[in-house]
Length: 517
Ligand SMILES: *[C@@H]1O[C@H](CO)[C@@H](O)[C@H](O)[C@H]1NC(C)=O
Ligand SMILES: *[C@@H]1O[C@H](CO)[C@@H](O)[C@H](O)[C@H]1NC(C)=O
Image 1 (cartoon, rainbow, N blue to C red):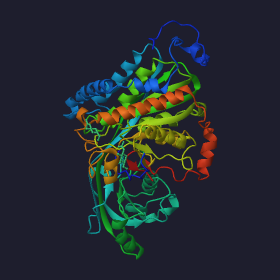
Image 2: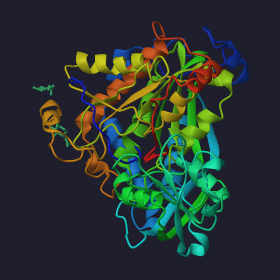
Image 3: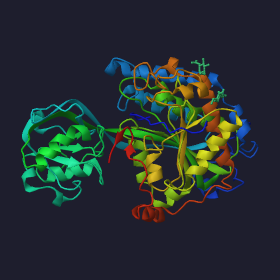
Image 4: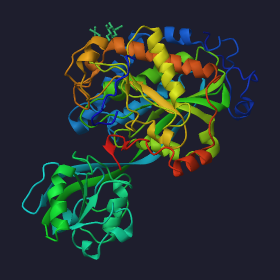
């Protein structure tokens, strides 16, 4: 999961081996049969939730986690510690491991790797001085370019009109100076780009709320300028000064770097099952640079790999498509790339997307994304309720957490595909009430090793992992068997029209770890 505070909304509680003969398929997916050799699965039992759940063992999960940690150690040469961050040998090894495991599954899946260019940014140093003040809340935005020649730039702070979403909002004297822009209405990237076009040497986006702004500019474009976020509290005296016609001589400095590198998503789709009606699920293959990421998201990606393995013992009615995304930690890059490049006809074949990111946090809560049909594509809520019903049936507690765009489901729901998922918590703090609901320690993070070196095999709670892996199995089995009662897909164009009409205004403000708007 990509970082930052989670405001916990409180919920109430919460086979036969494959045969390689190329006989024609009974069942639905005849067009696929023409394209690729098909395994005869006819002697296998039809997928069944109880049976798939029963195939989950902590022994298998743990074995894979240990393997993944070994792979993370491949990152040691370059990073001096285990990591699976994109570009590292640990990440390359992770992808190779996933792909190899899948390719040994008797041709049950159509496999592919989807390469794309990931943009990652590092801010090494930054400083903002407004008049004679160094505001504490000033924070360089993600994917910001550096200031010119990696040197401090100096200029007057110039108040931009409205919210700086139109070229006209930028007064002429922004040129050569520092644009001071109110947050809101359009993405930070748009504000920075317009500031750059107006000739600003840097930009500061200040909050309409008291809080700081930990934002990202999103995909780099040429006209972006070095951009900071600033809390509403720190901004207030300067807004007043500028409105009173005073000048605020300022200095901005950002030393940052933006890198582009090629990485890969891995995709596996059952050859059997209705190829026009797929249940899709994903986890992410990368970690942050700081550590091996065995919970984040080793736990999710291993769960998928294990279930993909166990699923081969069954026949399916609907196609099941697994994804291991790259570049989640850099801002959901892999899932975005995948969804935004789907043609409309392919988009429509995905009946829903289920996100599995961090399933075994040591101080866990059973968290269900509070996805609702009023503000998300229809079907998201039915998926949410599937998780709720399952926890309830097991006599387990759960909580709802915001469905706010912090993981790979974001691109899906923005493109009209119903989404949801479960998690066990990152850097949020367990409440006293949650301690009574789940055990563990109130006042501590759900995952005290979140985004750190100690996110290793010892960081996994196996009880939580087993429970959640079974729930993932249940979700896969349910939809692999039938979409009865699950809403039909809305046409992507129709969905885009309803978005344009403002229906989904309340959709996520986050994109990955950072605010983008
Ligand atoms: C669920 O939470 C309640 C407190 O709200 C607690 O008494 C109960 O033991 C919890 N159930 C489980 C299975 O942990
Ligand atoms: C996992 O969590 C449960 C419930 O809080 C606890 O009883 C158990 O000791 C934990 N196991 C590990 C390995 O941390």
